[in-house]
Image (tube, rainbow, N blue to C red; front, side):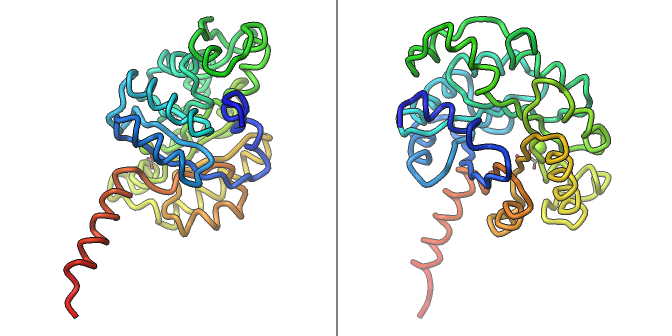
Length: 261
Ligand code: 3PY
Ligand code: MG
């Protein structure tokens, strides 16, 4: 697969309940992103919201993921939409924006993701076209349809505004953050992404996405839950983080080594 094919594979495969799996990377060493890209994930998400990534680690992480023939997704920090345009220039195939709570938030995010007439993304894809071999004019004509804008729904306000967010031009998908949503739905009482009210919200969101012809994504409450979410029609799911995989792997090895018996 060429780098261009890899970068465009996400937009081509999302839609219709593709059930894709993304790795989730908060460690800033690009080797982590490159290593996970070589596992059987469909994409790698580099997290700038809660992970330790900065613009340099994102630049190098995207390059490593591209070398492995996979598309990169970047989650930006809350409200920092200018970073969305920058990571697209660096070769990200999609951007996840956290805490999109209204149509106004969605419009602001989309304006940095899409070139006119949909949005107001500024021109400067020098790095991405060098990576994928596109001409400048091909990049301009294809970028709006091949880069994916993903708005996070993870508050009561966002659920109330879901149809308005989905109807916003330039928003291609929503992504449910079940941990923040569980805190919001319990009025701050607890964080439990596996709770029934969160599962109900996940079902509601995928139905509304279908109705609007847009894609549904989420951080699955567990790898087991992701199977049912795929059946419900989710297009893209994260099933854990690099930090979790490292700690769980270490714990499992320690448990085996210390087992009596
Ligand atoms: C959440 O569950 O709130 C998330 O943002 C998932 O990363
Ligand atoms: Mg969240």
